[in-house]
Image (cartoon, rainbow, N blue to C red; front, side, top):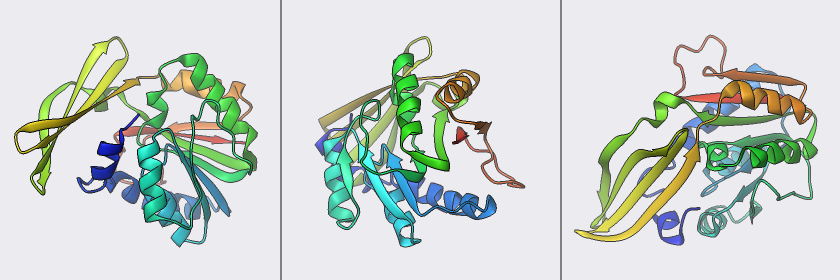
Length: 234
């Protein structure tokens, strides 16, 4: 779970680039698939960027994240959108939605396979009939080990990022925040790599009728994503 310190610098160091680019991809996907989406929930919403963009396109949005710091930032940026602190394994909203999303490999943050199954059953309960659950998953090549890399400097603060593998199918994403040469904060996020075939099987067991795994969300799209996109229709 991201700390309050890291949440405050998350967007400033450009980590909001993915939800911004994914929002444009998602809007095109909704149009291409001719899906009617009036309401959407984003699980692991971070600072709320995806919710904010989708709300601008007349979709009623709701965000949830495990990090109190991320939710505080989201509420500050988008005061008219409801945001909640919660754990997607157990948290249930009062409403149901046409679309539920989860990006930035939030599902990989769940290390226990039984908890992943619980998430799928949980999400199924609040997706509207005919609605979709769309999320991304780490691909193995995306999580290769790397030495510390500088991500930039802002107001004397410098962010450094590295990936290493503490065990089989486990990935640690470490981010160090420096003020000058002084280390002021370290974030270590544990993730687990999942077999897409296992994920699709468990989605079907949870009740979803149509399940797809792809690295090209849009038809006739030239580029392939670094992640897997999982699409489950109720």
